[in-house]
Length: 187
View (cartoon, rainbow, N blue to C red):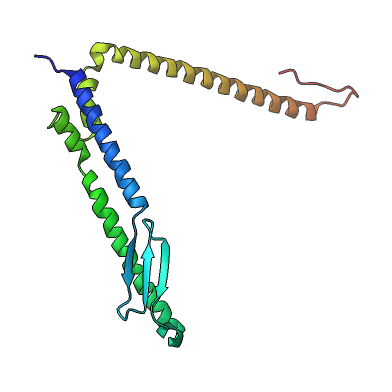
């Protein structure tokens, strides 16, 4: 009995589309989500958006006017952090539903027990490689690389010899008696 790959692909695509729709809905919800916190003394309330940005800050009393700057800043930091922590918890709770999607996809397609790791998944295909001419292709690639390396090595050797001849010519020209003619190296 063969595996119905077309059916499995359709099931997987359907699961992926459902997941995409759920993710888009979660994004829409989070884009408009807010979280609020109020200080213990009920002096100030802060509302933050999904990235923790301050959406609003409301002072309910005028007690802040009599506070020392350090005291006021400590109260604001505390209430801001509380609001951001509440927003963070909402975000985490909302995206928690997307955990283990890979396992869900394997269940939908009937491929449970399949490895999570791509390398692990590819092992059977790699094992079949020699029967599909992969070894020959690998050997051809190695041979081509060796030829390329040999050509580069030969070019380097030729450059080295040319450089050596130039140095010898320069050394010889210093020992020659000047004739008034310009000598040119033709290496």
